[in-house]
Length: 381
Image (cartoon, rainbow, N blue to C red; front, side, top):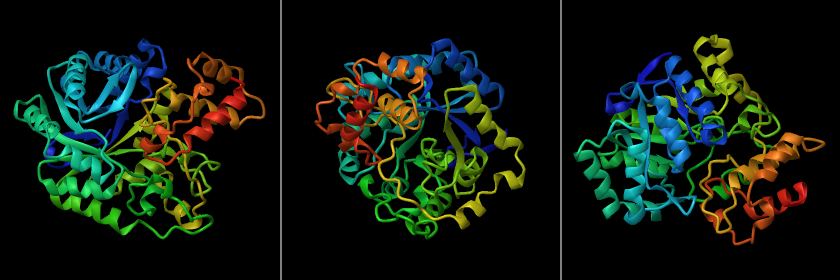
């Protein structure tokens, strides 16, 4: 494993990191063992944006005994309310949610205290100059968080974060598809009108962000490096061709200021595929021929199962419904295992009342209500 300096934090992080959002899908002991195995392979940075107790317990137990050898990205403003994820700046929920994270992760500190998920100017304004941001600084002053970071998909918000001077690193969405698109707060328009067109290269605003981060020594850790797995499959890739994990990891690591790619995995096979980057040849890492020979196909509204659509007033696990729907829709007949997992969800997609509140929170412009109807029709429940 190779290590890189994460900007002005001074932390030497593994260039392949661990995105922990899928861990709760499996038995606790199985996921704990996956975290422990990652550590034996040299991975030393893990993101915990998830507020649910199971995910946090898995990470805490997975790094127990070697807590000081891990760098944890812990999010401030990701809360668990009535059994669901809710992003908020309301201190009635922010403070106890962070204290819960601190207790479950262990060690009495969080290495990278993340201002959680800001994509819009309104949300930025709602967070800055309030009790929320004062709480973040209070945690930093007390050493409870050792560095201040932020997570965002919007390069304009990321630029404002760099220019504050106090935000030391950014968790940012980096992949070949996203990099062709201009900044927007409306993810519905991210790929609109690009059917069959050849990409025009990296958007200037995104390229300028990477250069600014390098200049200001603000490190970047990468989320959405595989676009929720869609870039690994020609059928779902916006380019119409499949990339490999080493190609996509190499793409991110060649952006200025990028220190680590936090791949999301919940199986040993996925982890092994990412770790293959460390032994891949230059030819196996080379993504340029694919980018040079393809045109960008329209793939608007692609669910990446990130969970930011929550909470649902009907308590539907939207990300899991979408995941099982996508798995089933690709098959001539629904696999028994997929049907069993879907039917175990309570409630299922048929409980959707069409309020569409989830769609306003989706970073990727997914038409969630229509997908719920399609899932209910496909599975019959």
